[in-house]
Length: 432
Image (tube, rainbow, N blue to C red; front, side, top):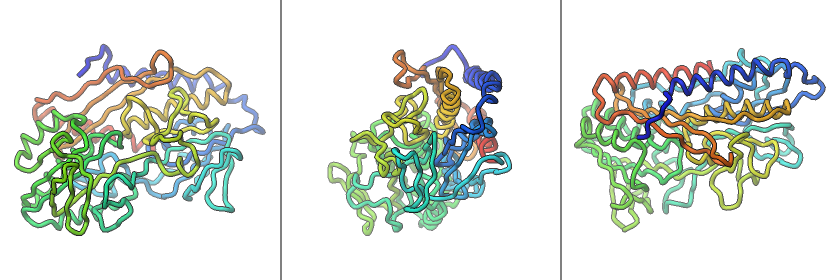
């Protein structure tokens, strides 16, 4: 743990103050934009990153045209989704529709984007339907590698749903979990870095154990890991020792945790040494990459899994006026999380306005806080601060602060309240 001379509250206050000053200072310049040259901004994807961009760009919606393209009417958040699996929250409590009354001057299109035409600066929905843009913001989430694990297909509906996005069936996952018999064995295969929300597989294992214990079902949960360590590891080990010492077992890569083969019919997996593990519930978390729209539109650098961006503006390398934010980008030291996407999107929006006004970009700073639950009333977190390196071409960490491994019950309960409070504030700001 690296200690910092400034607190998380001070850091957030500085960000909020800088943003408030920015909009106040530029009010006069914004009013000078000619209505005949109104820039058209298209946002694809209304998750945390896209919704945050919309929230900030909406402040100048009387001076620019904003169009949002989203394929779903309802958004299911990744944050707190494990609490739905663990029967702590209902699915409806993590699902939201955008409050269009807040965005009266914004046009919403509910269609699936097929491709981006860079030359004509257009977003295409079908052969006959497209819209043009002056500036394009892409925040479509992630996609999955389908050729890494022999025998496993991301699209096979017979598999346990991976539940790593808002589209997979979280209710089916929970139903199959609930139907397990006493003394069942659960296998969770955790992917290698990078992937969305690094601590989520371990939180999921904890909340599954917590839920099935309430159903008076004894189970064994085996986490087969493609990594030799993971985020907040010591805090998880402490929580497992206290609550699930006879339930959860973690096997790192060096001890055979890397899964290379899956047999759906026989409910078994094999590791890189050929060792067989059988389970009654086999949950594969697939390895991940940038969303398909980047591949389909030729927007990725050859051989790359993630989008390369300018960390000041979030403009894609080699593609003018196209921006990306959220889990599909390579953000260097920053993890793929909702908090990161929210922090990055604020910088993108502010500097896009600066570009429109032909002003200098602000020098960005970023923050990420990640909360994890081990039970409904026990949580812990890690916070990290970021800025650009000297060359201004990379995001680097300024340090981090993690919850005390030996925290008492009161501390864990307080962090759980903080986690719910952060989530409520975020979704209220973006969707309510």
